[in-house]
Length: 329
Image (cartoon, rainbow, N blue to C red):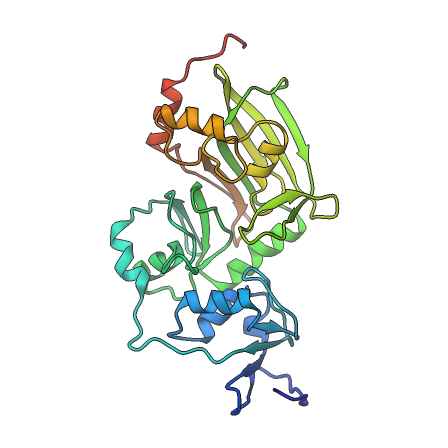
């Protein structure tokens, strides 16, 4: 075990190594302050498969100040990261570079500081146990000149649409600060749901917390984190409605859980949806979750507002074209 040692703050990460166990303990410096633990480890452990890094985090082999952490947990100046012995690949290869040729990832907005892409459904945003590569790997491979390209937020595997990538550490920290303080970032989704709300607008405030299950489910929980969504009826069909969902907060699976708990599950949602409804929509040709990140609004590094838009995918628009309009206005 690594014994207690006097820790020295400084401009660099302070490394400690136990030759008996192969365990490293690293102290976070200014450059690592505010990073997600998974991104920190991926940068630190060059050549180690990402799937192995994520497994080490989930199993508790990686510790922050002696405590377990989640992949999305952020680390801060002076915290001590326990890193188990992890073997690197030999030779090192970039799976995103190899896999990226098979994916079309449109860029819907770009400037010197930020990139907004239209994420296709079925592509994870980052690697994990079941996925050897993610969108970030592909985009980093395509933009070799920008080694600082990082995800600003995430989208579920089957969700398509606007996804923010920062080109600099400064931009990444700025947007995260905006999210935490002013909520100047706004995400807008389109979803086809079962049923038809009585009102054309619903303000949903249901706090959310994670279940103890291993399938990463989320549930309403009065002791959970505050979550707010505003549902707008865009179009009513017979037995279904197209909603525009404005996420005031950005919790995991928020749009899906809020719709389901409000009595309007999203079509094609295998985790929180209605099986019979999903079956009927599949018979009409729907082969995926009908949830699309339609528009995103944020402030650039210069403080000027930016709005990016990703049109509804053709396969989802085709489903809408098949539905019969409701008699209700």
